[in-house]
Image (cartoon, rainbow, N blue to C red):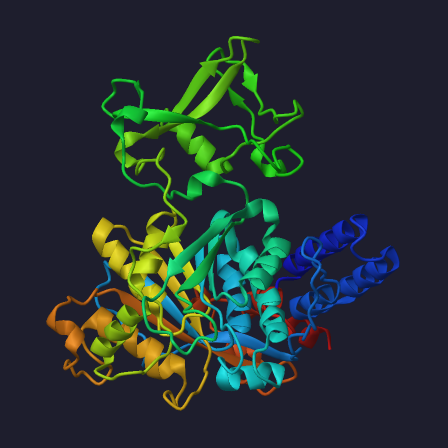
Length: 527
């Protein structure tokens, strides 16, 4: 990991520790020790593990037995799997599947996607024995609740760094773990960025093996990276009468929504990068003001604010009390999706798990190839209400999120791309691992209309057209930081083109880049 990035990450963790000490969640002496240890950490993983020891939930008060991520001296990197990668149509979007531990995958994604992911959807393992050998490898026993929370903590911390400032994360979770996982999300993303919870009716009838009553639902937690409500767009039917403004310039009618931030974290000190000065209609400098009269910040990011100004989509309204102009965003009826009619939090109208099972059966011509898959319809619903181009799922499972992205692209003619991460988890149904036996094969079939062996005899093709998008498949490989044999070192093995870079012409440039971006590489040079 880049040295400056590691220092930045340490600063973020230390600020969190200091906040906990200030709130008297942890003793100051303990906080001082944690900060000292974090400063001495040689890698992101070590820093995360130390910070985890100081994690206590200030609002819920619950504790869990923290099991730390294993520290490795190996250098982990992406290697392209040419056999599983394919190109159908270069004009179509190209997506990415990373096979390996999702912790390593997230670290690798930070190299070229930090602050760039718009939407994350995850469906983590819910309980005992649900992660097979992966759980045994990483935590030496099944995924109990302690292990679930311990496993999620570092991954969510890395995921937060991947999200753009206007990004959104969705997390499916069951009834037994919802309260605990929400507590974890509150700590990592901040309770002020909690948008709400969807309750999804995943099945009807059946379930007579449940202890007391039939459990028909699951939850979907919704959090934002920061309080920018305009990126979440859960609205229903449009009502043109709600859009009362019209500039008669061909853009149509619009409603207005205030550009100055309201509610929590509305001060300039909360988001110093979101306090750009602009000019009002009289040419005077205008700076946002918080509801309490102190210097404020904007509700939208800097790029979006400039874009609204350049397109003439800022409405200035004069305050009759003080004569001050107030800027509003113009929300046009033509693309507002009925912004004044919010959706409901209980989702009855979507397909259930049975529909997802039938879909997988039609793709593989085989029953029960994957347990507890989500229907693409529920993920489509979430994605179509978020303004984002890059979608990440680091618990990819059967690859439902990938198919949902492509299906939605087909419907609205957008060009979203997805990144899926799936571990090499082996089960009795998937002896080669889920990523190889299910995820990659599903994507190949629905994207190309054929299996990797060229056969086209699966039922799904009888009433569907393949999406014809492209897929790059990578695997997480490792090399010892002490490896020095020519041709086998990290500087020989790591391919910079897997991270969107051109080939380095000078060896010194390649060495510098590797040392800046991969954990343990710098220690190798120092030694």
